[in-house]
Image (cartoon, rainbow, N blue to C red):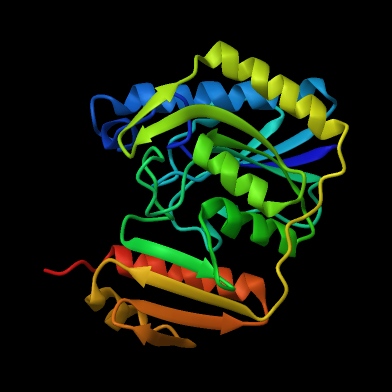
Length: 273
C-alpha cells in the first residue's frame, strides 16, 4: 500500500462540539483548527511509518481552507480551496490504494450525533436507492466508483454505526460519544492516537472492499425550505417528489454525486428572504 487519499472534515474531530469551533473568525475556531491538524497528523504519521509513500489530503470542511501545508508532513500534498467540482472527494482517482475519512460526523436529522448534518444545514434528509445516507456513505460510494476502498473512518459513535452498515470491512475510530447535537463526551487525543494505531494495524491485515451500489442511482434530497426546491429544479434531470423533496436519477454515480453537490450548493445559498 503506497498511495493514500484522505478526506478531512472537522465536526468529528475530538473536542469539537459547537459552531464556534468550526466557523472561521470565531474566537474558538483557531483551537478547533489546531485539533483538526493534530488529529490528521497523527493519522499521516502512522501511515508513513507503515510504508505509505504518497498521501493526498483534501481539506473537506466548510470553506476548505482550514489546513496549512506547512503544518503537514513533506510527504503530503494538500487540496485546499472552496470551489471544487467534487467537493469532499476532489482529487481521488483509481490510482489510490485506499481512502481514509477523518473527522466525519453523523447524518442530518440525528439528535444525538454531534453537529449532525449532511453537507449543509439546508438539507433535512438524503436517500440513495432508498437508504438514508450521510456524508460517509455518499463519499464511500464515490470512492467505490473509482474502485478505491475506504480503509478507515473516524468521528463520533453514530459515524461508526454508518460505517458498519457499509459492510465492507472498513475500520472505525470513535473520537467522541454524542449526547445531543451540541454536546458530546470527548476522548483525549492520546487515547485516540492509540486507537488510530490499532485500527490502521488491522487495516493492513484486512481485505477491505470498495463500497458499491448497483445502478440506477436514485437520489432523493429533502430540503429545509420549499423555495430551495423551486430553485434547485433548475438543475437538469431533477424532478419534484413532494413539497420539500426533489429527485435525481442516473446510471452514473459521479453524475449523481455532482448533481447532489449542485443541489446542496444552490439550496444553501437560497434561504427565504
